[in-house]
Amino acid sequence: MGPIWSSYYGNCRSLLFMLDASNPTQLSASCAQLLGLLSAEQLAEASVLILFNKIDLPCYVTVEEMKSLIRLPDLLACAKQNISTAEISARKGTGVSEVLRWLQDPHRTNS
Ligand SMILES: Nc1nc2c(ncn2[C@@H]2O[C@H](COP(=O)(O)OP(=O)(O)OP(=O)(O)O)[C@@H](O)[C@H]2O)c(=O)[nH]1
Image 1 (spheres, protein in one colour):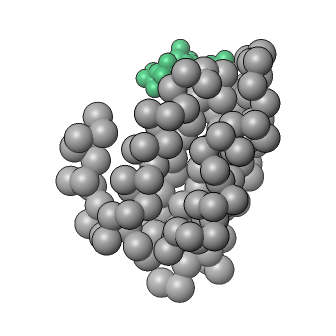
Image 2 (tube, protein in one colour; image 1 turned 90 degrees about the vertical axis):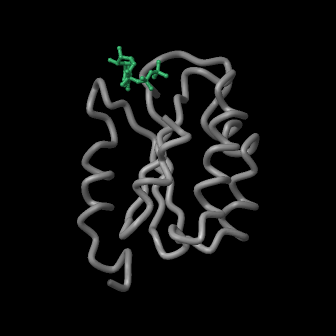
């Protein structure tokens, strides 16, 4: 779906980017897609929430290691957007209330 994402950039204020925390083999491709989104001019004002999903599944790489592999500290420092992260399990519902709070937070954006 990545090639058509740009059709949805207009008026986008909030961006939820979901990574599969149970499958590190997708990490580099996901990171490249994330960098593309963060560098899109139309998304410069958007608030970004990076979701590490499927934390209920075992994985040989921890979420902290994944954050390091995608160089999250550098992204937070260099991106124009306000970026937050959350660790969730969409299947079990873990962390989903945090995501809803983020979406409803009026201080997250200026508009
Ligand atoms: N264990 C677990 N499974 C999940 C979670 N979220 C989604 N899934 C399952 O992952 C499978 C793929 O989900 P999709 O929503 O189709 O995601 P996708 O991006 O198309 O596919 P994947 O890359 O495999 O995640 C489905 O069987 C979902 O039920 C989760 O948090 N934990």
